[in-house]
Amino acid sequence: MDSRLKNIRPEEAKRFLEKRGFILSNVYGHHWVYYKKIGNQEFMPQVIDNNKQLYEPNINEMIRKSGIPKAEWADFRQYLKKSK
Image (tube, rainbow, N blue to C red; front, side, top):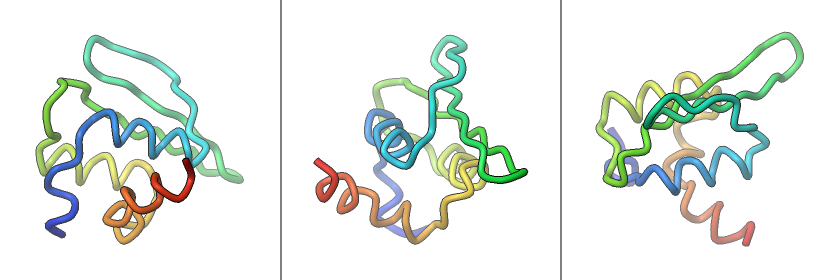
């Protein structure tokens, strides 16, 4: 795993998804589910908001379900700074 992905915080992941056009669909306790439809494909990543860093399996699952390439996730902090 890319070292830039190891210390993602839930707030950063949620903000990144929202800037990429994802809409908050549901909240189940600490699980925030986002939604985006592109053509016939639906993407529903889930962010676990525990006010700490996300764990590697959760990060990998979130990246897989978002459909956003891993390289863009690795550069997400730079993306957030540009879009402010």
